[in-house]
Length: 293
Image (tube, rainbow, N blue to C red; front, side, top):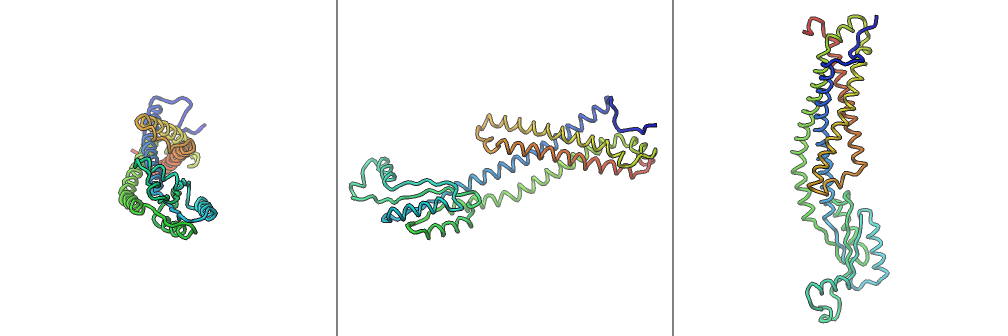
């Protein structure tokens, strides 16, 4: 005689309802977790962009010879903390300034009072106050460099703001994450609870605990896969709607990032589904029959 199983080839109306409600509950939970990941990623991306706005400007000596100037420019261009450079020679800068002032001060002075300058965009990893202070000292020691200017006050303000926001936001995210995990665990537990008598019946007829858990674990796995896919589709839809209001909001979300987010949601859905199912089934396996009512 075949032992009873927690599923059959033909689902009843109650089983369909349970499957739908469980999938919706898990999808909402994964949606919340996914939105937290999206906001965290956007916050990190915006922080990196803000740091890179703190540019470094290197002014060269006016009387430096061309060979020393070229060597200094190459040293700056290949500096490990530099992402990109923009070189502005003194003649070009003078012409632009004369165009803004509407008069030729070079003819009046008899020489070009400006010096060649290189505008440096630093790597995000080198855009902290500590790293930039080290980089500035390194640049000031280059022959042919007269002065190095960087926006220390702006960078300190950015870091101070980030430090004030990180703690409260991390705490809030942790609370939401714990609430989401609890909601998902409760959803799975209620699904197993509705079939607690079937679990006990299988146990009483001699079914091995692993054999009892296996169908439920498969069910939890499928719930996790479907819920992760639904949550990702919802997040993608939300990002698309936001994109219509702000065309630059999706710039950080490259195909690689979206694929990674999809993989994370699927993995979390499967892990939560399997872990919550295992805990719920084991709980009822340990209970006596008279305590299941």
